[in-house]
Amino acid sequence: MRGHPLLETFILGLLLACLALPLHLVTKGRAHNTTRNSEPTQVIQKDLVTADLLIRSAHPLTETIITVGGRDHTLTADQVELDLMVNPLEPIEVIVSATWPEGTPETALYIELAPENREGISYTIWGQESAFETLTFHWKGDDYE
Image (cartoon, rainbow, N blue to C red; front, side, top):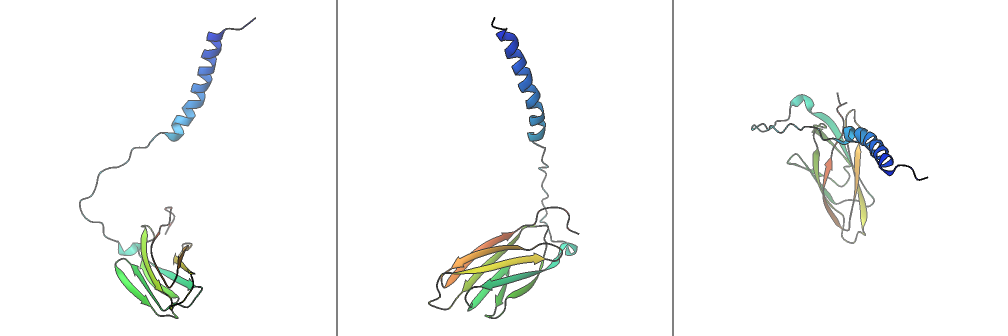
């Protein structure tokens, strides 16, 4: 004897609906606040913290220019660390321009930015005699105090 196809289809649909409800609750979109403030945002002084920018290269550098927040910082050949004031609650854009002596083979340049009380984020860029890269550092989470 064959069963009841209409009843079996109804039970299968009911089971799928029971599975779809939790899935819908997990994946439903949340309302976003779309109101915009017409005034430009300003960095609040209390959000600024000191941060160490560390630079390491496999070969000696001749010149390194780091641009953060529109300010250029020129590092000497033996300078590997730069102290900055940053707001880790916002993404930080760092522009790196590095040059090595002529004839230097392709080499790596390691850059790490570590605000106080936060883990550092690092990037490695590659270049042959020179390298130019724009890096974005962003720390997730609201646990910064």
